Image 1 (cartoon, rainbow, N blue to C red):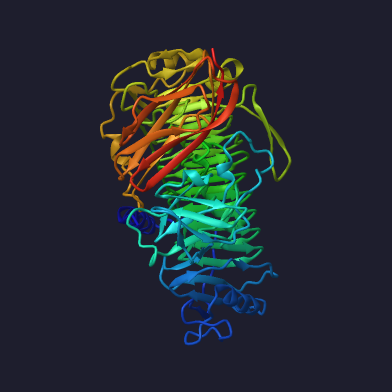
Image 2 (cartoon, rainbow, N blue to C red; image 1 turned 180 degrees about the horizontal axis):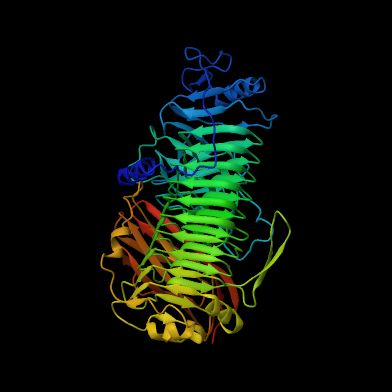
Amino acid sequence: MDYQKVFFALFVLATLLVTGSRVRAQANVVENQSNYLYVDAKTGSDSNSGAQTAPFKTIQAAINKASSLNQQGIGVKVIVNDGVYRESVTIGNYKSTSATLTVQAANTGNAIISGSDVVAGWTQENSTTWQAHFSHTTGFCAIPSGWPTNFAPIIQRTDMVFVNGTPLTQVIASNQVTPGTFFFSDGYQILHIAPPAGTNMSTAVVEAANRATTLSLVNRTNVVLRGLVFRHAANCLNTAGASVFGSSNVLVDSVQAFWNNWGGLGVYTSNNFTVQNSVANYNGGAGILGDQDQNALYSSNETDYNNWRGAQGAFYDWAMGGTKLFQMRNATVQNHFSYNNYAEGLWFDTDNQNVTVNNATLVGNVMAGLQIERDEGPVTVQNSHFCTSGQGINVLTTAKLTVQNNTFYNNSGTNKYQAEIFIGGQAGGKIINDYITGQAYDLFTTGMVLNGNTFQNASSGQLVFGTYLTGTDWTQFASTLNAGNNTWYDPVNANSFKIPNGKIVNLAGWQSAVQNDYSSVWQQAATSPANYCTAPTPSLSDFRVTVDSNSYAMSTAKAVAAVRVDSFGYGTVNLQVSGLPSGVTASLSQSSLVSGAVTLTFTAASTAKTQTVPVTLWGISGSRVHSVTFYLSVRAT
């Protein structure tokens, strides 16, 4: 926990109370229960009464009894004692009552609902590799309808292995197993692992993901989930390990969703809910997901280092990110943090209305810190900080967006399109339908307000503003823009605004192009924007390796991939390439570094066959391994 953030949140709360304001909340659950049930994984039994001196063994047994009491109008608080609960909990569909159900950890963060099982019976294969039987039937997932298919199959896997709490990286062939990795044989149901150097396998605890869900809350009202940990769900693409469906008046407070194969926590088709003081880190897809929700508050949450599974297939930009919200109505995200995700930090995707983002800090994300895409709006983004991501804000075919009093700093080039703020989208507009009313909207990026912001680059090659819009798309943006009182600056180059047709101009050229923003200035900020950009120390010392595309096609027998290495306290990373076909070579501009950009060049000899093959880039540092698999279309001269 970052105590500086906790103190800040308390300061904000105290200020609001002093001024007589109320903190906005969408859930209003009255917790006045006098009936308690207790759960203890170590000492309990499901044949017990659930009293404090006779606790249940499983959370599900307590939920079943609590739900029965709820149907009688009796509120219940379920207290879950410290322990690991290896079960999939369902809080099922019952008739609505006003009685409140609370499921609460006795000690926040110590009641863990786990999708993994402990695997025993290990035998040694060689000096570094061990094997054990593991019955696992959910290891490979179908691609969701409408999704792209041009990524490596590794991201369709759900297998996860942890040795003494440390994750291993999955490989797709037994001959790829090296220290820090594992391979699962579907046909033989055998796990092959190479634990970190120095691991004593006679005492090691090896956990393998085996259940797709940790908790499902379905069609309920007046429910509180507090202090629980959801981890190790073997869930498929575009799903969450812990989910709320079709429910209302739900408070999710101080929960943690860690190391789930895809999404950590999801709330869907629900109304009047609050997610607060929660953390969703190190999930394979998105940390927090939402879809078709109304009257939602996300307050003081953090989503970091997510989309590691998608990144294994260079898949950064679809349904991934720190927090991904879709088709929301009346939603507020406040005091939010997203650091170092292998995707967007925060993303409002398609058909969002009446959205406010206030005091968000989005730092170090591979794609945009914030993406606003295909939204009819209104959307307001204010008092927030965007740093060191691919773009600060990426705006795609969205109307009625207000961006005011924010700070943008050092958003550079982790992907192809880059700027402190970038405007793109569907050429010729995009028709979307309101999921509630069915009304069709022909969206262009129009009606934007850009006021009181600071945009500051930090090094050469960066842009304060960028776009690929042209023609009518650009005209509609520029003619409806209302901009002013912004501070723009680049320490190296005053020509830092990229306008249509690739033309790069200075502030005067920008003002001329949009016929607006005349009250803004070109000068360095009085207070360094970098002050807002320091990410907290990660809970796992690690590194990441990313590339700028999931496919490369050769031209004149060459192809070039832009590689990025970021070390989060781990140290030097060594790069190497595998999977090259005969006649193709690969060269790295650097093969060993801590952090920075690397150019990977592929060259085909005249003997190379025309074909498309998967190629894997490996990052190795001690017993930590990360891989990125992408496709290379080979064409010789």
